[in-house]
Image (cartoon, rainbow, N blue to C red):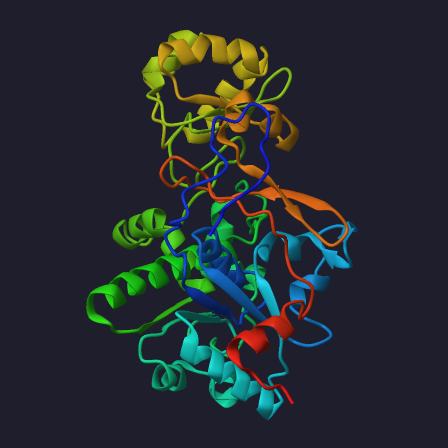
Length: 397
């Protein structure tokens, strides 16, 4: 398998690797929609696996028409292109018995199957793990749901914002007076995709040793609970006290001052864990060292904020960084993309579409010193259906 992509000026990351991508030769059936499941399949594809996406004829994956902005590429959203690059599309109607038979044929040849239907749906279709392992004892089966397979919430819609709402995570963001504050990313979906991919890889290793297939299951709620393991462990062992967000400038519901984000004269500055006595003289704030960073957090954050606002971000970094203080500018996307250190990572790639190219991110890792990139973009609905049917001997009627 050739892994190719475009060179970007300034990058020190090679843009091709040896033909032995780690998962080269493995077949993944992506029967999932939207984000969590397809993003796990994307990660396996970045590692060299061949990914065949099963989509509904006509409409395709729901994310094709889920727009983050009014930007349209080849009739589909940027979201779909980002999640489904480097995949093949096979259009099958899961209400059609002939098409279901075709999926079962593919399962006999697959190394990995991924699905994210609501609990109970995949069983009604006859494509659940119990069926899959009878068809293919060595298959690795990945399943992600909203709230797990049992309990009163299991039948509810598994959507990111709804999972955040039930997980407690919204009470860790914002300030004391802001009310519940969601994380402005599909963080549950993305975490679930990484957990699912990790489990699949572990089961592939086990299969290599024992020949056994296996089932990996996770849910949006489970990954959000795990995401909070540091703070939740504190809550479980300190008498059940609720997290207390700062009135202003704070960045963590538990950590003491000066941990926070502060407005400067021309931007913002982040200060991480730092003993107050280390910054007392640097900030010229007498008495800082004798204060209690926990009990006096709000007043301390205000004092520090008042001082930080007097100078530019660059002034403060020039003072704090040589003294070993953990500080950073708060960048927006244009500033990040322009930064020399970001450009040196080579984390952007151009992928081909029917009408041109789309610039997107690349895999967040390097293998043998090279970042895997693939020039092929997301497929059209059923774009490879004919070729796949011929290759695997599928009859769709």
